[in-house]
Image 1 (cartoon, rainbow, N blue to C red):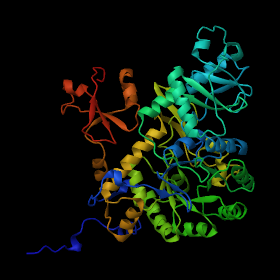
Image 2: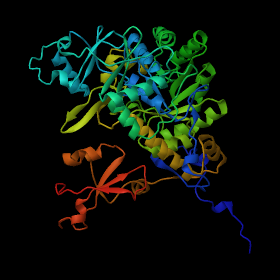
Image 3: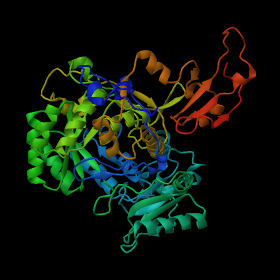
Image 4: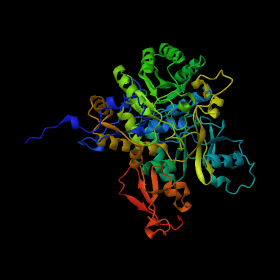
Length: 568
């Protein structure tokens, strides 16, 4: 008897049914049902638009938070195919300098090398080493990049110095090997020359100077070694002029119009994001209209929004993209304090559907904790995903590392926290004129996570595997499957959510392991699992002394075993 498929017994539900029940869902609340795999993970193309006119190879952007994105983060994100948005919790001059530093950066060189003036002391150098980890500095006449190079100070120059007040010009090495970056040499040629000279000369630092002897870049042996052992980053995100793509955040006050002018005219920023916790306002509409009138070639991302109605008003005013999310960030308390917002999965679905009809990309902002939540955000309608907490604590994030109870950490705070609002960010909550400031975020610390480049590369590969399991070769296919009903979903119970994660295991945090193992546990994507005996009074068997290092982005069968008797 021939087989006849009965659609009435089809598994799961279409998104239109799941998200139109009057329930606000988060990413964890829903799960995608797998579809037929007919291609390899390497065939998945994540290229997507972040605005009407800007496409990214990797649909990940860093959040404009003062503990997440400045020049170093913007450069790193562009180098791996994404994009960074530099925060505006600073002066106009400071923000423009961050944009210029990122735009003018040559990939392959140090973004923000340690530079000091000749009158600085050895104590100043030790303080910098303690805060940043730099063991050597370039010395210029201005104490900054762009100044005339006078010399270099390394550990060999100060190892036996006993007077901390000794100035750097007394101990610096002035006979420094350098490379002159001529106007005819391309960045790739300079990088090749620098690598060959570092190999042949066997030293660690190689300053790059212009024809007048001014310091313009710095190549280091450690950076080249790290790049040789790392996966290829792929094509960077570049503007039509060949320089890295860089975005910046601005507010909606009258004085922010001058900030936009400076960012565009002096920094040559590629896109600005109007940074408000609730973007559907007359202030934002007036601001986007002003920018479109005065700077017609500059793309503008508006937000934040969580409803289709909010989107329509901003798109009608001229928005080239929308940020979606309200109160879903790990350090945001808007929903709790103000009782407004929306579950992020529901918000992304409805705004993504409207964005598709209007031809405007949306950026899912908030609620991102892993590659799985990014897959859900993109498959539910987002064109790109903005990450804050996921990138906080990386080497490229602003701030200095601290050691608290033996754990290396960095500061991380919400832009609605009292600490951030005291500096400047109260404008994004329309509260700068209020005498009583209400906190809509918190401050704290996050553990060190290594380089954001590594996180983005591993995450992008995991996203491709997620798309492969869902049967979509690109983001457009995922959106088509979602709205046609081909992609089925289900709502998860609390028990289902628990079952979908690591369970029935004893999970040991990497920072609680002995120091002999700590170096192997720095990767935030790796968890350490020790299987406990069923009888808690029984001494763990010898095999329980073998913590399993499970790489979350590779086959779970590939494990490394390290033996220790100090875990119990």
